[in-house]
Length: 285
Image (spheres, rainbow, N blue to C red):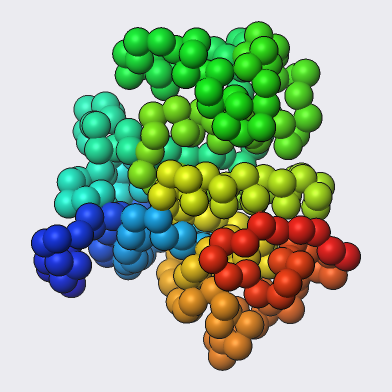
């Protein structure tokens, strides 16, 4: 199905949200004579306003490549990416359009995503500077408070914060331009279980407040099952399974069951069993 057909099927009276059709991508080869193989192929999905979709799979399955294409960091070799009917694929000029700015990303590395030589206020406010915001200092203070930090923290440097606090700063930066879609690429990786729950709860609260859509990427099915409504399982660059998150443990797909069996005993869960309506998360052992 083409992008136009998919958009028409959603209906004229609704925001289309994010629509990805037939996405395929490869990374540039160092040799001009050699064509790199496809990293992902035939990836199609929709993500409506306020919805959450999980992408899971082991390392190298193509999760971050999909994120890079949707975020406009990598030009797809094939397929289409649109937000509310507007093309958001990476252009040859390398410039991000207004539609592309409505998609922001929280990267895996909480420390590597922040410039160690700049104050966190500068890093959080950088999207506002590029967008010509009239009062950057005030907006940065609002963003820091929104993610549970103090306005005065804007004058501090990244090394003065814990890993969980740095991830909160990255979330604040992603929120700066009030995006419709936030891509979370392993946002809880490397964090303590209790801190994972805090970050997940923060993201859930943002979704409730701003009607933000999430593309949540992780290799941890336990976290994804709690954070998302639907989940797609990737293996070697292709979608091998797709279902509602609540039905994931009952999947008959062999690869999905292998991932479920690999979940360690300590994980992020809801205190009242399966999550309903984006309930807060707690940690259990």
